[in-house]
Amino acid sequence: MAGAVFFWYALGTMSALSRPIAITDIETSGLDARIHEILELAVIVVDPHTLEPLKTYSTKIRPTRIERGAKKALEVCGYTPASWRYAANLRTAMENYAEACEGAIFAGHNVFFTWSFIAEAFQQSGIEDPMDYHRLDLFSVAWAHQNTLNRPRAAMRLEDIAKALDIDPEPKPHRAMQGAKLQLAILQKLMRP
Image 1 (spheres, rainbow, N blue to C red):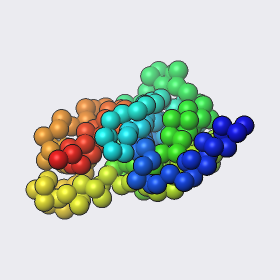
Image 2: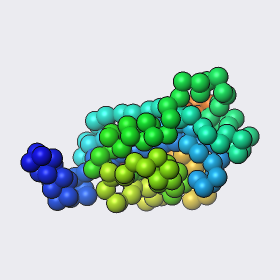
Image 3: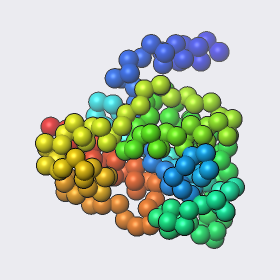
Image 4: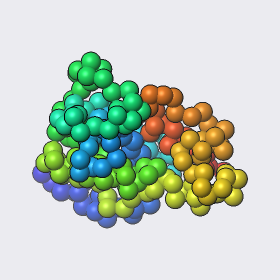
């Protein structure tokens, strides 16, 4: 018990700039976290100084309301009942995600969108969010480097940023781990001299 108390104290006193970064990507059945659901979840937890991966987690999540899914969203991620046959349930997925992300800062390209689904999944699964309260929006990081990117502000989609940095785009259909890897590659290229 004393070790657990020390661990939580150490996390509580850790500077936000020293916390690992949990680069998260999701594939969903639509755009509204209150109606749609996460179909696939991936995270790459990286060292905040070196941006080198510390751990990863990825899983497909068995939908419970697929009839509400938007046709376009299901096409984007390549959803079929057969390919999701062995997917994890939401509770198991969020338990594993929480374990991987403990004490980390949540990061994503469209952080509001991704976080809205993650927060809803934590609530629905009954799993406590173990992450720091700060959020890192990779769009904002790219926006701050727009002179380096030589891109107009209107062209700041993930694939636009990747193209500007000579990084291969995410293949289709989209997979959450491929999206997380692309976000990491962009962050590394923007933040390393």
